Image 1 (tube, rainbow, N blue to C red):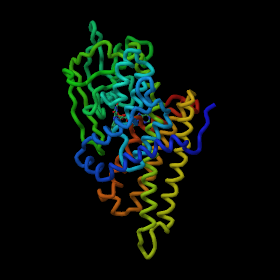
Image 2 (cartoon, helix red, strand yellow):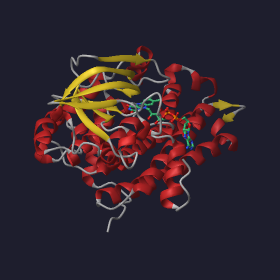
Image 3 (cartoon, helix red, strand yellow):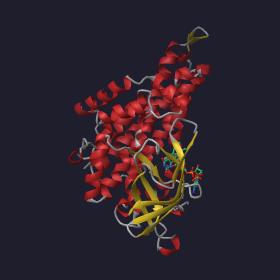
Image 4 (cartoon, helix red, strand yellow):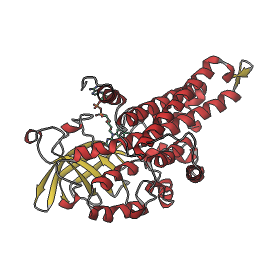
Amino acid sequence: MASIELSLTEEQRALRAGVLEICKRYPGEYWRDLDTRREYPEKFVSELTEAGYLAALIPQEFGGAGLGIREGGLILETINYSGGNAGACHAQMYIMGTVLRHGSEAQKREYLPKIASGALRLQAFGVTEPNSGSDTTKLQTTAIRKGDRYVVNGQKIFISRVLQSDLMLLLARTTPVDGVKRKTDGLSVFLIDIRGLKGFEVRPLRMMMNHSTNALFFDNVEIPAESLIGDEGKGFHYILDGMNAERILVASDSLGDARWFTEKAVAYSNQRVIFGRPIGANQGVQFAIAKAHIATDAAQLMRDKAAALFDGGQPCGGEANMAKYLGAEAAWEAGNACIDCHGGYGYAEEYDVERKFRECRLYKTAPVNNNLVLAYVGEHVLGMPRSY
Ligand SMILES: Cc1cc2nc3c(=O)[nH]c(=O)nc-3n(C[C@H](O)[C@H](O)[C@H](O)COP(=O)(O)OP(=O)(O)OC[C@H]3O[C@@H](n4cnc5c(N)ncnc54)[C@H](O)[C@@H]3O)c2cc1C
């Protein structure tokens, strides 16, 4: 039976210390400067890769550390807790799971060791489309088999880190909806090498935060048939298989943000003196921070439960979704408490509060909107009618 550890093991503490050591070399100024220029934290991600942290979940036989999702989450949480943004590199941890679980032996041997060593980067995951949004099975990008190739046509929106990746995991329709029994069939997942791909256009989008996000256009893009992962038509199910890992890891990003906000808010409220006493002595200031702390601790318990179940090979759909929801909401609550207690300084770039505030907001929306998490819990945990 899976059980939740209430404190970190010695190995986990060492892992956290190692990540913190790297993060110390990338202070607020580093992230702020990149945020202004909307540039990728190349140096940080490279150092993290070289130290092996982004290969934490890749099994040892493929050159990774073979650690569990709890450790993967701890790495991401630590980055965000230290003031950085793990969103630049978290996707590799969950994308590679699809290759690991459903890829052929040849694909695993070809790609996983190179991803683990950093020779190849897989940080791009192409699912969302302008006309389908959260309703993934309605996506319109097609991949049609022609001999030893597939020809891809269509558009994707909000796809992150494409210009910083060598490989992308792509979800496309290989059989039209009217040719399949269930709308979840007929979608396929491909691991494609996007370097110099003919007919493939990437248009960067300037977003609220620095997230290297793009619109993608596929115009008769030819990819080798060997790019297909697993069986044709089963891609949606493969992607669903990876959702729990994604939810737990994103919850960990949020937990790191929440802790960063709370710590900053406490420190500032204790030292800022207005009306002759620290602002933190006012219940109006203190209680908001205390509530955020309570929300964060509760979110962490759920993340830890989800991670324990996941690492124990037990079903964890409900817990992983709830962890993602609670984490994103806790970070948002802590971000609001932090910006409130900082008064005008909360809006000044040099404090990093406004940057982290923008960054943490994303996880209420992506990779899945919290509304859809509620829909999942209503339907799958509580047994209520499907609401969408
Ligand atoms: C910065 C950023 C980076 C991203 N990176 C990636 C990426 O790398 N790869 C990728 O594939 N996608 C990415 N996304 C896309 C993201 O996953 C989607 O934006 C998200 O899934 C929602 O889709 P949508 O924007 O089309 O919203 P819609 O699906 O149009 O939804 C809009 C709103 O309506 C609500 N809604 C819709 N239907 C229902 C319903 N039945 N019940 C209740 N509420 C409903 C939603 O919850 C949401 O609030 C990114 C998005 C952002 C902002």
